[in-house]
Image (tube, rainbow, N blue to C red; front, side, top):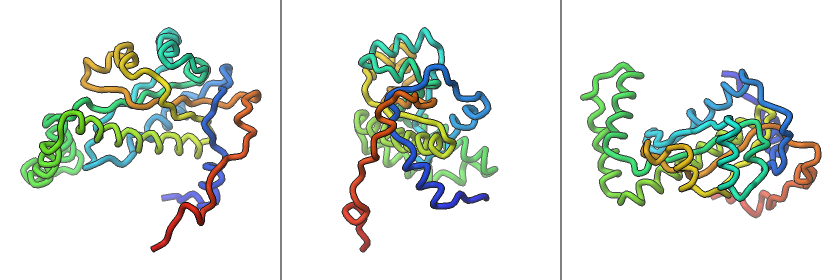
Length: 215
């Protein structure tokens, strides 16, 4: 393990901001992107179920379609990459069984040894309505979104987490509904434009003493 100094982490988090205008001429190097797109996969999720799908959109034609249902926000077209964070809609028993099978495979254990874990997951899921289960999965996507944005900041890549889009239209254009998923958030990534006025604005945050409480 090679820890990054706390000062470096805070410096990068202070550097980042929700980029409003990207430099459309600059693209993220493919080797760097291949690593950045793995960051949300390493995000924590409830029970480790990973009830999500991350759709990376670089196709210009598809981006234009999505731009029209994103209130014409320029980031959709100008950013190097667009990532759609989609949640399973709704999570099912099959999701739990898939995760248990993967856990057994990765950890080299018998499926039967994971039965108690499986039953806990199924018990939690059984107490939710389909709507609640999707909302639960969606909350996990927001954790992944935070991990992605932080990873971008640490790598010196600009990003903008966004909700200003029409999820139903995204699902239709990207074929997500047919795959059992629903889009919940998006993020654009690339490099800030020198003419983005938001880049020069001071980051507005409450004082530490007003937000952090020690008990």
